[in-house]
Image 1 (spheres, helix red, strand yellow):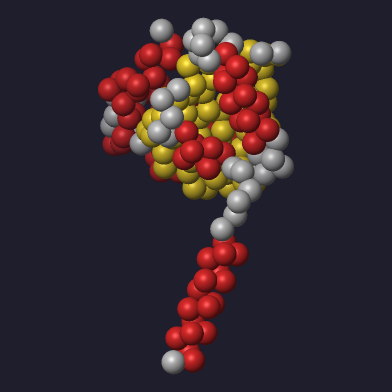
Image 2 (cartoon, rainbow, N blue to C red):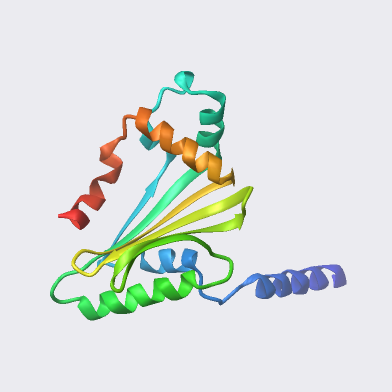
Length: 178
């Protein structure tokens, strides 16, 4: 009986310790999945429709390092400009977390894009692309994988050229670019 009480108390303690209330990009995605002002999309590597038998070993390795992409987009209109500013500021704030290492930034002011990553140079767990434009809205793209590195990403770009992208998976984003 004592062992059961001790085990139960230990499990509750571990649960409380592991619950992290700190804001994160992942939590932001989850919180806004059902929000009508956002478009969410999860994209698997199958979107590429590539013939794996025609890939080089380096291309196969790069493709295997890619698990999925999560896309969260906010489309602006005349009525939600203030919300756009708030949500955009939230994402920018989340990306200031030291775990996100910025690779590059383009644009200035209200329009622009940035590419950041989580991990080390040789073992990247996540790439984050954030693009915003006041007239259209913003999009946050999380490219998740294992053992990704900058070379894999460049190689993956060459795989994209050989792919026959399944546009059906990207249909929800069409309303953002209209």
